Image (cartoon, each protein chain N blue to C red):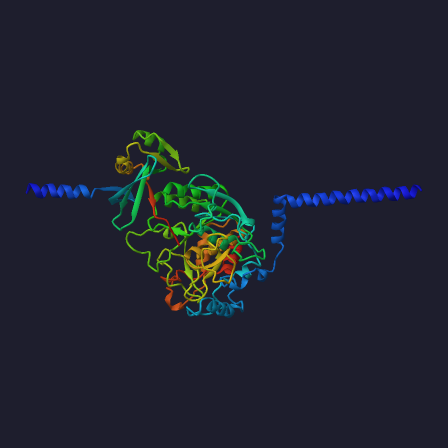
Length: 127
Length: 394
């Protein structure tokens, strides 16, 4: 029995997953692999339930609901490295890469944002 | 004697004057900037579009041109009869010759977001307004490495919109509009948004995108909505897999409510078998079908390097191609014509006009009561009717 439990834990650890909110729905992702470039950054790759492959950088994209002071909200989450991508969309750099999904979820669950998701890297197909 | 002296002085003055003029001409010839301006001006005064070097291959512009059978014969010879070549249907074009009697897109800026372009291409450079590389925040969008394996898909896309009437090569659908070439290859949400922001901030009214991810992020959708609200029309290609996009887990850029989704029609004046389709695709436009005939003739995707098919019929700067990648800029040019006659037109009005004036190609029985067909969307774009309707709204 003990061996079975250890085996199950091993299997679960192999199939580590993450999740984020997309259009209000929680999307579960399956971790695939990590890419490291020659400098310092790394990009983790995940797969959606429908088979889409997504890379993530160390940034979260956030848009707050009307009337919300977005910078104050982000400061409440101890997020400091904030950049305006547009007038209303912010990019936030995360120090601890492993917290990117939990922070994205917490921001969305605050009820003050329209969306909060990692900066995704996707395969862009020319047509 | 005095009169003779006056004549001598006059002759001397004339000689010196002529020398100055000659010197000035030499100086102008040595000044490449001025030379380019002179060439540009020469390009603008050519009005007979049939004198365009490869006019006979431009079936999406003029499918009634009597040379299509000749093209088919040439193609057959070039390909050793490898394929069954069919002549182009005489209604396969987008009715743009009449639209050009009203406007050729003057005053409108169009942005193409893709993998760059050859900014020195003979059929592009006169209409390039700005360049921007959103991947590295520079203005370098060209393939400078001369690496034939690195194609410039954006080169072909751009040509279908702005290739000028200059006696060379092809003609874009809005040949007097101006182009912002934006290079953005990495499928990175932040960089994609930066590309759209650059187009917006530099005056683009139309943005043509011949790519997709089938999994568009909320941040990108929010940006597309913001452009829509600002009066900028964005077009996206539906893709070339011949599949429905109405599947669980697929949310393609071409399906976003705030853009015009474009599929492809072929030389037979019907939707192509490769064109992706779905409830959110709006129109189809010529994308060409190499299995029917030549495909579309466009700017070669490697600039002058000639990496793709020209069958020995055209120079290395041009090639035959097919895909929704090309039906999209052809449509973007039509939208530019609409903005040219009515600068205040909204993206919602653009869409309404495009779908209500579209030509119901194929079997009319396949369109529902709203005028929609699952594979052909609302039909093939009709440039003349679209421009007339846009003008009437003014």
